[in-house]
Image (cartoon, helix red, strand yellow):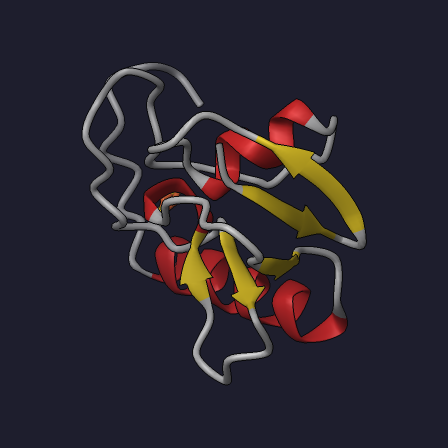
Length: 102
Ligand code: FES
């Protein structure tokens, strides 16, 4: 069972668990739009990005498997800015073509 830290909090999860699910286990809320529990990740919105092991490139929490020793940051200015940009890009191209009233 991989043990990792998310925002300096340790969590142990079954193999194959995503970073998103591991965060939820800790009560850490990572925003999502395209993620649907039980479905393959499409990684099309990128509002769930997190920083992993200090890497410059952010990763989608919904599609990244938790690994032993992984260090995840989900509440930094850099992460918030990247999520905001992802959301702004989505909204900039939104044509109001939803079926449900929104
Ligand atoms: S929720 Fe859309 S990429 Fe993760």
